[in-house]
Amino acid sequence: METLVPYFTAKSHKVVYERERLELHDGDFVDLDWVRKDSETLIIISHGFEGNSQDHFIEESASHFGKKGVDVLVWHYRSCSKDLNRLPRFYDHGDIRDLHEVITHAAQEGNYSQVILLGFSMGGNFVVNYLGSEIQSDIVKCGIVFSTPMDLSAASKKLKKGLNHLVEKSFIKKLKRKIERKAVVFPELFDLEKLKTMDSLEKLYKEYVLLHHDFSDLDQYYSKWSSSQFLPKIKIPLLIVNAQNDPLLSEYCYPYKQCQKNEYVSLETPRYGGHTGFTKKKDGKLWYLWRIEGFIAGKAKL
Image (cartoon, rainbow, N blue to C red):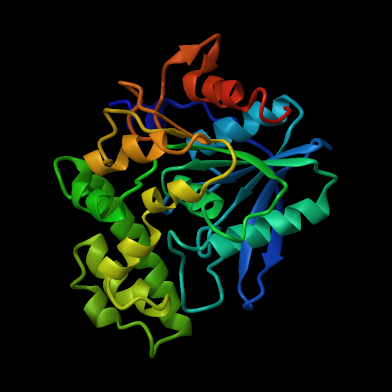
């Protein structure tokens, strides 16, 4: 219920974004939605799987921090904005070089002294993987992630249990639409007859996504980009918040021991919150917004 209720009851903030298209080094592009306040601080938000800047928790965050006078940038993964991306590939949990290009571009665009990374669900994996990589930018001062599937293999299995299959069906429907659009441009690469038989997200990924991302199978993909393995390498403050009642996370998405071994990483597992829900309030704010501010205090300036 905490996962679903916000989707139906969240207040629309109608954030007025300024859209920019960033040309990537490989000839593709990603679309950026800005909230500019002429601040020295920039919060870069990474959305969830098949998400965008209109998701309720993204809009809530952009509106909240924009009103505080902070610049906000929501970046769309390849194919997640209105226009389909140019290349055959879509996006995956390992596209941290795309995130790096976004950060580098944003740092050049504004007079920023610091960048804060905020990620939700799949976006949380982006942030953790990036902070644990060797390509991160010094301008990034801290990261905060919510509802992060830190073990991709285990999380994919959880997606098939109980009512979660309804979420999987939604993902399948959205991804199939994109594949059909890709097939118009690349008919030799996307078999639409086979597409009709695809009834799971794993099958879609194996047959239509991973082949264009240089992975031989799902096990290789899950092994390479599950974010829990990047935790030991993180050297700046990171807050991970995964609710205990998150229906999409498995027990392996709560890496207590790994986090305890790294002084820079804090793992919090509140009893309630669902998956990117966190409907409770604290000091008049939605809890997750209150928690973001609290974590940033002393680590960066808002």
